[in-house]
Structures are given as C-alpha cells and as structure tokens.
Image (cartoon, rainbow, N blue to C red):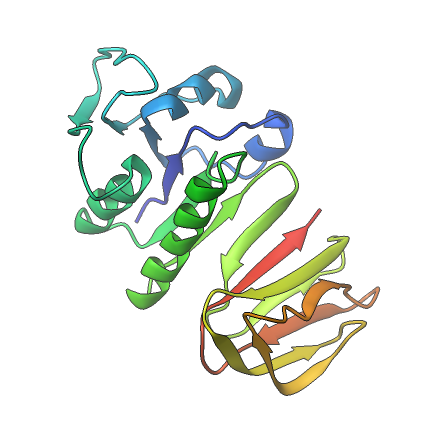
Length: 205
C-alpha cells in the first residue's frame, strides 16, 4: 500500500532535507494553503482537501474535496480521515508544525488518532522527526538529541536504553516533562518504549 503524504500550510524552509524523505510512489494530499509547497517539494497533488479560506482553489485537474468553512475538523484532520477510509495505513505529515500553536498541537493529536487505529506515521519539519511511541522505537546516533513529551496526564512504564539518560519502567507527567534533550550514545541505537499513555518522540537533526 502506498504511503499518504499529507501537506499542511505551516512554513517549510529546508525543502532539500524534506525531499530526502519522499518516495516516488507516495500519494500526495495537499490541504488548502499547503498548496504553496508544491513547487518547493517538486511534486503534484493526487488529492486536494480544503475549505480554501487561506488559499484560492487552483481548480487543477485533480480530485478536490471542497469543505465548508464552518466545520468540526481541520482540513488536515479531514484529509487524514479520508485517507484512512481509503485504506492507507502509513502517513507522513509535512507543513504541520509551525507558528500557529493551536494548529501545531491539533496536528500533533493526529498522531494519537493513527496510534488508536493501529496505523503508523510521523511528522517532519525543518528540525526534527516527530512520532508517537507505539511499541519499541529506535533512534540512531545521527540525531543530535531526542525528547519524550507526554500528551496524556502521564505516560508510564517508560524504558530508555543506550542513551545518556537511561530509564527503566519510569514515568513522565504532563506537569513535569523530564524527557527533554536526551542523547544517543555514540555508536549505539537508542530504544524507547512505553506501556501506557501517549508519548511523543521528537528526534532532532
């Protein structure tokens, strides 16, 4: 099954880095003002989704889902739901982390949605890979840092191996995010797992 790449409207400055992650067989979904990234990414949309309150409908010869401006879902959330309904199980989110903190946090919650549906995916910005811990996650030593942040009241049963700050069956509370700026031991691959809660893993380039 192809991977769905969902492109939002947040700024992307390092297109060269982002394009390293793209595959020829990817299915590209552009959400409203995410269309501004077409040229920078060097790809064409397979699907366009949006209410076009922040970008004019380009009226391309491409399947376009026009949404009402008054709705519960964001354009990005609706795009994800459409892709899930169409059978996609793997996702890459671009242009979803940016200046609008409300949109950023809302978009990060989409990682919880895909976890709850036993799907996989991650977000990518100019600085990092962002995913939700689901089973055992691995971080190689090419990353400068990695951080763990809970989106639940707490995440428990956290184990971190092969890192500067290891942890065995620990926990992180939302009021005290102690998992910031860990480092992989050089020559090793760090391993992270969690037994409960929604734990965000941010791998910093």
